[in-house]
Amino acid sequence: MSCFNQRVLDFSIIVDTFEQMERTSSRLALTDYLVSLLRKTPTDIIDRVIYLIQGKLHPDYEGVELGLAEKLAIRAISLSTGLDVKSIEQIYRNTGDLGDTVGEVTKSKNQTTLFAEKMTVERVYLTLDKIAHSAGAGSQDAKLRLVSSLLTLTSRESRYIMKFIMGTLRLGIADYTVIDALALAFTGDKSNRPILENAYNVSSDLGTVAKLLAIKGLESLRLLEITLYKPVRPMLAERVRSAEEALERMEGQSIAAEYKLDGERIQVHKGKEKVELFSRRLEKITHHYPEVAESIQKLIKTNETILEAEVVAINAQTDEFLPFQELMHRRRKYGIKEAIEEYPVVINIFDILYIDGEDKTSFPYFQRRKLIEKATKGLKNEKVRLVPQAIVKKTEDLEKLMAVAIEHGCEGLMIKQLLSSYRAGARGFAWIKLKREYRSTLADTLDLIIVGALYGRGRRVGKYGALLLAAYDSEADMFRSTCKVGTGFTDLHLEHFYKNLKDTRISHRHPRVDTGMQMDLWFEPQIVIEVSASEITLSPSHTAGINSIRENYGLALRFPKFTGKIRDDKNPEDATKVEELISMYKRQMRSIKNTRPLPKS
Ligand code: ATP
Image 1 (cartoon, rainbow, N blue to C red):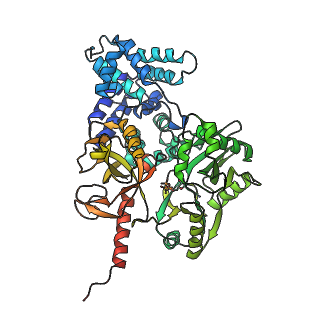
Image 2: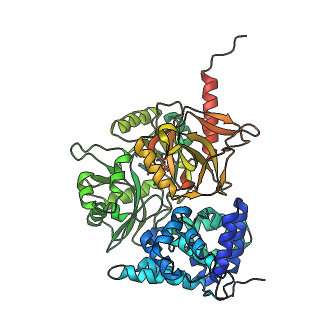
Image 3: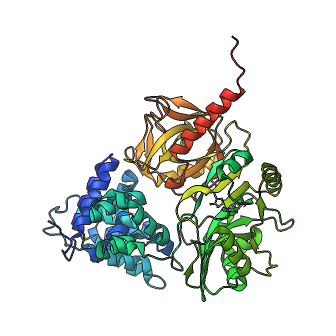
C-alpha cells in the first residue's frame, strides 16, 4: 500500500532508518533502506527528508551551516538532562562524539516514547533551521533553548539530533545513492536515473529534484531550467598523455587549446544586485574572493550571467601565475582584507552558460566564446581576464603551446571541441586535459580518497604512519583501495591530517569502502589527496579494478607519494576513477611492451 498521502512523518521513523544505515556495511542495503523511507515520506516534506539524511538543511550552495560551538552544545545537554557540565565533558572525553555522549547520558530514559515528547520531522527540521538562522545579540541563548528543546526526545532520537547538529552524522549517503533510491521509489525503475541526473546537473539541488519527481512526476524534471544563483554541475575533462593522442581523440574536429591554469575553478553568478561565486563542489565561496565578485560586478557587461572561470594566485610584482597551493591562504574566515593584499588573485574566464534569462549551454563552444568576448569587451583590468585561446590543427602547434603554457606557470593545456555544447556534470572527450609529465614514471598524478590509517611508530607516534587510499568506482558507487601512502608528508601535513581526519573517524570499515587491507582506523570517505607513483602493479590485497586484468587481483600503486596537494576542491566522487586506473595500467603495459628489446630467438 502506498503511504504517499500520509500527512506527517514521525521523527522516530527517520531514526529507525538512520539506525539501520549505521549498522550496515552493504551499499545495496543503504539504497533499500532509503527507498523504503522515501515511500513513507509525505511528498510535501520530501525535500527536507533528503537534506536531513545527507546531514544538511539546505542544498550546499545556500551555504547554511548550523555552526554550534561545542561548549554551547554541552550546555544544552546539561540544560535538558540536568547533569552538570563537568560530568558531560568527562563522558565526552570517552566517547569522542557529542551525539554518543547524549545517547550515554540519556540511556536510562524511557525508550518507548511514552514519557518522551513525540515530534514530527517537520518540527525537528524547523527547529534545526531556526538554530542555523539565529544570529546577532541573544542568539546564543536562543540556540541554547532550541537545542535543549530538541533533546527532550527519546534517547536514540536525541543522539541523532546531536550528531546532526555537530556534523558527525556519518551515514555515507552520497548523491548517487539518493538518485538511485529516488528513481526506484518513484518510478520503480533505476533506468530512469539519467533523467534525474540531468535535473540534478542543472539545479544542484536533490531536495528540489525529489519534490518535483514525487509531486509532478518524471516529465517535470525534463523542464527544470538553469537558474541564477543555483550552480550548474561542472563539465569535466578526460586526460591524455601526449599532444598526438589528444589530436587522435579529437578525430579531425575543430579544436582550440587554452592554458590549463593551476588554480581554483569558480562558477560566477552575476545578477543585477549581487555576484555569487561557487566552488567546484558547488559551495558558495564568495567570501573567499570578495574583490573578485566586486570586479565582476563592475566590469562584466551583461545584466545577468553565469560564467566559468579559474581563479589563480599571482605574484603582484611580476604578474606571474603561482601554483594552486598559494590559494590555501585565501580560504579563511578572518583577516580577508589582509589576505587580499598579501595573496592577490586574478580571475580567468573560460566559459559562459547563461545570459539574461537564456540558457546558453546548448550553443557550440565557439559561439559561447564569442559571447564571453562580448561580455568582457575592452577589459583592460588585470583582475578579470579572458583565458587565452588558440585554434590548433597540428601536433606541433599543440606541443609548442604546451611549452609556452608550462613556462607561464600553467599545468598544461585544455583542448576543447569548438562545436561541443556545455555538458553539465559530464566528463568526456569534448574537453581534454594535457598535463605536463611528472618526474615519476606515471604520466599523471592521481586524486585518491583517504579511507583508513595505520597508527604511526617511532618518530610518528601519536600521528598516522600511513593512510589507506582508494579510487572511486562510479558504477558501483564504491571506494576501492589502491595503496597505502606514508611518504611525502611534512610534519605540518601529519599534524593537519591527524587533526582533520579525527572528525571523520568511524568505528568500522565504511559500507562504501572495499579493501582487503587490515587497518587500525577507518574514516568516512571525505578527504581527497593527490599522489604520484612510479607504476601500477597487480595486487592481491587492493581491490581497485579487481578482476579487470586478472582474476582476484586488483591494481596497486607502487611507491606512492603524497604530492602535498590536499584536493579540498574535490568531492570523493570526483577522485580518480577505477576505470581511469585500469586504462592507465593498460597504457603503461603497452608502453613497456614497446620499449622492451625483442627477445632473442
Ligand atoms: P585536475 O585534477 O587535473 O585539476 P579536475 O579533476 O579537477 O582536474 P578536470 O575537469 O579533470 O577537473 O580538469 C579541468 C579542470 O582544469 C577544471 O575543473 C578547471 O579547474 C581547470 N582549468 C584550468 N584552466 C582551464 C580552462 N582553460 N578550461 C577549463 N578548465 C580549466
